[in-house]
Length: 205
Ligand SMILES: N[C@@H](CCC(=O)N[C@@H](CS)C(=O)NCC(=O)O)C(=O)O
Image (cartoon, rainbow, N blue to C red; front, top):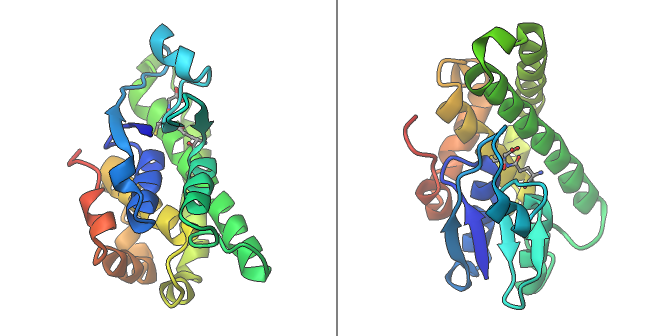
């Protein structure tokens, strides 16, 4: 299998951590791809019309899109129910938490595109402030959950949370999340004890 990948992408990082934790990373070739908003990329568009990464290209050529779907696919390959419980209330809590965290990542990525990629004269500050606030309030919500999350076996929501925090460090280094959210800071430190989390840290901005 091949995974389209960039070390800067928090979504690709989520899949990479999951693949390592599931013992599948040796079956996956990382395929570096650069995606640039507002530019055509006819080659990559053939792989996915959404032109986003990550994408998992299976050995038969079929393509899985979206980091969550890819992680669930890998989870099933590894026997199922490992990072996403197969049944029960915890399954739905973890899926709900993952959706919130995914929305936070989407909001942060949109902020980045708006503040740093979009031409200066076209930027809409109120819009990007609103999106940043969604991520920030999301962190406040997970500050309440951080201790409970640390006490559970690893799951996709914990992986997504560490990717949110790593992306905040990478692209919004001055946002001050560590001071504002000390329980998230402790959670992040604990997660960094895992080689999968450490090896996948985003590059220095
Ligand atoms: N829902 C997707 C989001 C993926 C995503 O937004 N990836 C970014 C890179 S971090 C991307 O490809 N952006 C290019 C674009 O939106 O044009 C997932 O979870 O995989």
